[in-house]
Length: 289
Ligand code: PAF
Image (cartoon, rainbow, N blue to C red; front, side, top):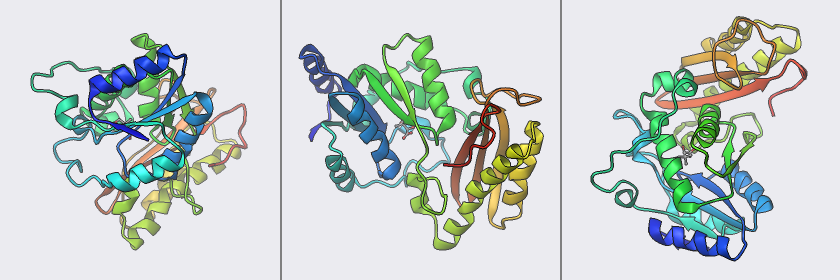
């Protein structure tokens, strides 16, 4: 696996590859990889002749009181995991190469990032769309893969790609879960054994919403109530939001005639976790994967 730090060198690598007729799949990451990242990378491998990844803990997507400084990092372990896929090229820039002094240009979506996490993490999605736009211009992929666990991020990036005419296919991939249902996340590393048990309330809550849906509930408020009951009866879990919104626009709806996403953000101890499920009235039997 080739490791490139400089944006210019990365661009040259990709331009040369494209010139040879190769296709490039891209999985951007902030490192501390888990099976969720690896499954995106394996899918990327299948979709193009070359696989690129990036490892960059992007400072602009963390709020002033968030976990940027303590975000888990292990570069050597991440490289070993990428080699198993295998990844062909890893772009691992230094912060000053991504945001040189004087940087003042941002990429920002509007409606799609107004609610859910956007309402609770001001500036977060502006940091995400800006860094992803920059990574797209540097890595020049044909296809880029994003996990459905970060559902609003995925929708915002799809929106950005459409609105700014990026010539890149965005491929969503299902959330990867631990055998007991916990959605895989680099932030799970913060959880103590007791918190890890409590964190299961998120996937249990989504299962409860899916069960209500299967039994015929078609009002978003009923799905939210089913999920909230589980979360609120778990001591040590502080709900930030539970919402059921249109799965495409992420806007509030009165009744469910099109796919709906039930999304949760909650704090378990000091760790903020998110999870979601998409429920489709055309396929009401669907369960949490
Ligand atoms: O999902 C992530 O890990 C990050 O938000 C991303 C897409 C790599 C941008 O920093």
